[in-house]
Image (cartoon, rainbow, N blue to C red; front, side, top):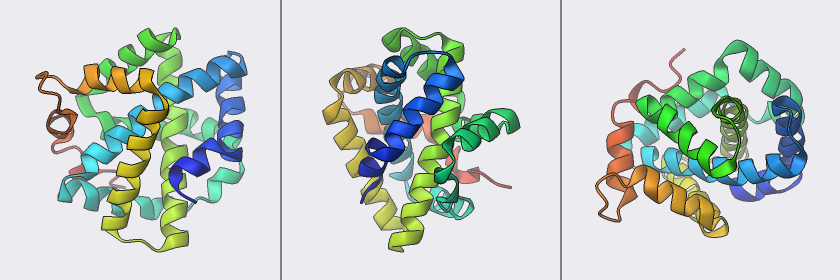
Length: 197
């Protein structure tokens, strides 16, 4: 099972319920928002991990996530919001582009920027725990992590054309059709200190 299957299966259903409860929206709105936010997170992680130092930092950070929290997403979400852990993860993933990402998601989802902020703070540790769980189960090394993220990001964008269009507008700053170079500039230096504790 890969990260995409994991997040779109039973875990995905639980995530929708938790997001709906935390944001005060119905489950259909939560599902639509997640369909935009998840590809954004995965694409950003994939782009950052496409540089060796970023991949190493993310791989090491997964040592703090083993998948054990996925059995209680409600508790994971509450802890992420209350402790600031979700915000910390987002800061490392998006850097100074976080506000721009949240605004783009808000405009495309119809949710307020504050709701989008909470949504991302909930999803980020879920994604990290899912990745950490897969790392532990499969025993992959850095190359395996990079490949898995790239495949998941590509698949998510293919399944969600609206998310793909939004990501193109968000990350392709110089309009050359290549999101990777711009995303790498966005993440330069950020993942080098990812989740230092």
